[in-house]
Amino acid sequence: MSPEMADFLARMVRAKANILVAGETGAGKTTLLRSLTDLFDPAERVGVVEDTAELALENPDRFNLETIHPHDLATGEAESRLLDVGDLVANALRMRPDRLIVGEIRLPKEAFYTLRALHSGHDGSATTIHASSAEDALFRLELLARQSMRDLTVADLRTYIARVFDLILVLRRLRSGRRVLRQVAALDGIGTDAAYRIVDVFRSVTGRRARTL
Image 1 (cartoon, helix red, strand yellow):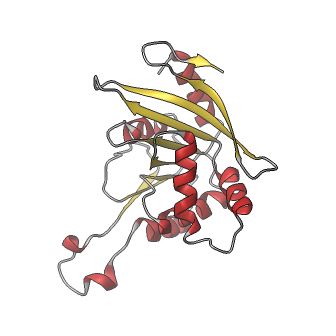
Image 2 (cartoon, helix red, strand yellow):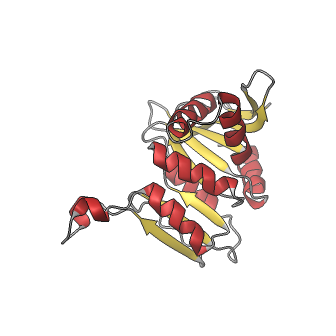
Image 3 (spheres, rainbow, N blue to C red):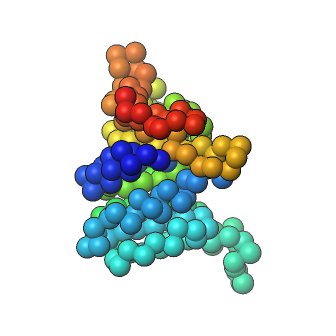
C-alpha cells in the first residue's frame, strides 16, 4: 500500500471505524487485519473470535475464543458440544470487549451474530470475508445474513449492514505473488433505490502508485 493509504488507515483505526477486509484466498486478509490491531490503544479490551487461531494478537488486554471441532473432543457426544464462530461471537459480548475481531465470516450464523454484535455498539471492530471487490463483499455478506434475517426487506437489511461497517478494504494477490491493497472504500449508507453508496477513497492500479479519489 502507499504511505497515504497507511496513514489514512491508521487514522481510521484510531477513530474507531468498523472495517470489513475482503480478498480472495491468499490475498493477505488475516495479515492486514493483524497489522491493524497493532494500532489499537493498549488500554482497550480486545475480543478475538476465530475458527482456527491465526491472528496471534499481542494486545495486553485481550481474550481469544476458538471454535471446537469434533476432532478436539475426547469424550461425549460431539454434536451436543460443538461451538462455532456464531456461538463465540454471541458469548464474546458478555466479556465486555471494547473492540471485537472476528477472523472471517463464512456462514449465515456467523454473519448474523457478527452484524448484531457490531450494531449493538462495538466501534473499531473488524472482520474479513472472501470477495474480490467492495461490491462483492457486501453482496456475499448480505446473502449470508439474509438466511437468518428473512423478515427484513432488502432495503432494511442493506441499511442495517451500512450502519455496521464504515470501510471496506479489498486486497489482491498478483500473479507475481505480490499482495496489494487494491481498494479502500467508504460505505455511505444506501440510496433511494436501496443500492449501497460505495465511495472509493483510494484505488490502486497495478504497477502504479495508489491514487486518492
